[in-house]
Length: 306
Length: 253
Ligand SMILES: Nc1ncnc2c1ncn2[C@@H]1O[C@H](COP(=O)(O)OP(=O)(O)OP(=O)(O)O)[C@@H](O)[C@H]1O
Ligand SMILES: [Mg+2]
Image 1 (tube, each protein chain N blue to C red):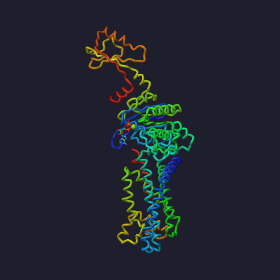
Image 2 (cartoon, rainbow over the protein chains, first blue to last red; image 1 turned 90 degrees about the vertical axis):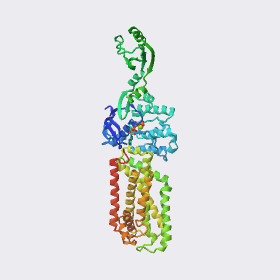
Image 3 (spheres, protein in one colour; image 1 turned 60 degrees about the vertical axis):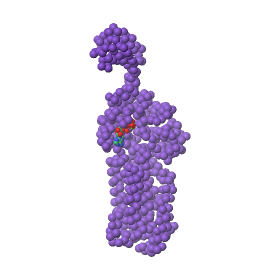
């Protein structure tokens, strides 16, 4: 079985009647890094909270490694580590104690060696006897990651792990995530930084208004991103693409005044030179031109505002 | 059974108590001692025996119960309210634990505190008055049952409360009057007829009466009734807790 998490027909209507999730279907592959993107209030945290057991689903089914999250919650929850969006801390406890507490809570017998390994990997070892309260924001976030990793989960949810985190710590986080993937941990993260998804994820899902509108291999999206658009502003409007120019992937826009040519910057021949001479031969004149690039961010914004 | 989880919660809560030992243990002992000084020594010297027991000794079971009830409620409600308030509760909700395990951890720890406090008060009291306990086993039974019941009650309160105000208002507006009118400082039989009847609607009367029976074999109501009331309260709280977790009330949206 390749899916470690399988969500089908998931709906969530909150007590006030707000529909936060609408019929979400999603499969997360074992061992992948999956980025869930979406604007504020899209429903990212809601999905995560349901899978982790913090929020009750209204309807639908969620399986973790083939086990139902409700009927077999002991099995599924033990497999999951969650780093929440907020950074709540047991203020008066030491780092060591909170992290050890998490391990026990998830049903694992004490293992100081593992806790030490986790703390060291997060550069928290020298803080182990420090009270949580006195840690910096970034450190607190690391403590939450340590807690989530304390019970050796198969799946790790990172809900906006790098929000409000400095550049250096962000790089650290990315390395940690990559390291976890090496160990076979499936990582699902949400983020508002498209760059983060680009850097880390193998697949990307986009959610908006509670609907999952796209799930795609990142590389495919990146290929999309590699596309540039050349827009020619014509002096005379066109009704249709002249037959001499068909088959070039041209599109008409701007009430016929714009001719848009999309091309791949990474390929050797962009075809621009040929296009321009063909245009002249076909008698199509233009008085201005511009080029633009569709970034993942643009694709994302585009999707979200559709 | 996720034994490690119960242990983790229990240990965590006990650690919290020892960290705040002054607040958790010294404060109730101090306030109880003050009651002894004021009611036992100052006023008690003017009151002769009640049912053959000196006034100072008479108030010991009630004072113990008073402390156990208030401490149980405040410790237990705080224990669950605080993680709800700070947000750390998410971890318990996402952990592979069933609700009886969560309750066992939190309420078990809170009840342990109450029992420790009750025992310390008993020892403190023995410095002020001569205590001859008639039924030590019954004392222990009432001590444990009351601690557990009121810790469960506190747990419910902590889950229900969505603000600090609610958390403190119930102990002050409901529990305090009930315990003060529950017969700690007097025997119900000393009241006028009408008030005696009204008192019988106060559940705390039965609890204190039961404890006093365990100490001195004198009671306002029969000990069987006291025990039955204590158990009824315990079961009622257990049912509410079960309902809370079944429905996710104020815990899972
Ligand atoms: N407990 C709740 N009760 C009612 N509505 C809620 C609750 N939690 C979330 N919502 C609503 O559900 C919607 C989705 O929220 P969610 O937290 O899942 O969004 P998100 O995608 O994580 O957003 P963000 O990027 O801001 O974290 C929001 O409109 C939010 O207001
Ligand atoms: Mg969120």
